[in-house]
Length: 274
Image (cartoon, rainbow, N blue to C red; front, side, top):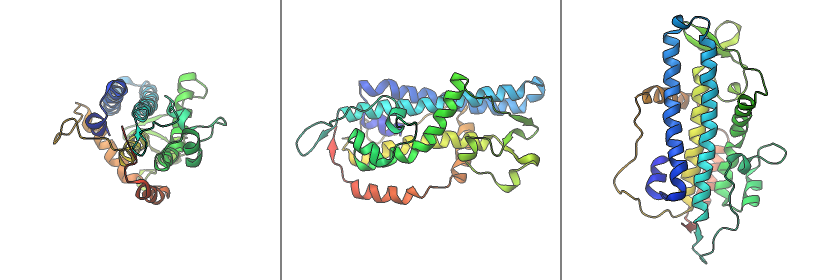
């Protein structure tokens, strides 16, 4: 995602949100590593470890929500520069700054692909990917708003010698991932880390699929630095990489995967150029 943006759509309007995502990823990696450090030294903060874990969970939710909005600002900036090859005209609609305004309707329910396509006049494939990730985003937004506006009680985190645990039915994590049978402890407690990994993984998956789909329907031009690739390197990157690798193994592709492939094949030929 970041490599494609840096190589093909690096201009003034995308620079700040691009660096916003960049910083968010570094912060997410640091927060994940901090959780590991906290669990390794929880005996030194007796009675406080659970609350410390909660603050990191809240921070990660806010960071994931932030990535969605930075991504939307990038897509909006790119879309504003698109011209149709047939007649050189520009898109009829200006996209919103907020990802939520893009995928959540006035009834606070996720919009369908057809609703997104009609409302914002974007290609069907792009609308499909927006709608595909709207339910997860809606859960994340509700969780983040509850944290920021204190609209719901703080979840209970159980700290053990094995790490931080939560109840297997704790929303929204119960809707994000699955746990292996051998991970369950008495009272239906399960490890927290797979849930956090799923939250981060699904955030980055949405970003990756949206940018990739965009690149299939818009001719982005030549790369800024041919034969080069952009990488992020962080001292706490391994902790995040390990967490994402685990999340990838647990990920169960939704039925819409096959539909997405069909839509991309149908709309895969570039239709416009920036």
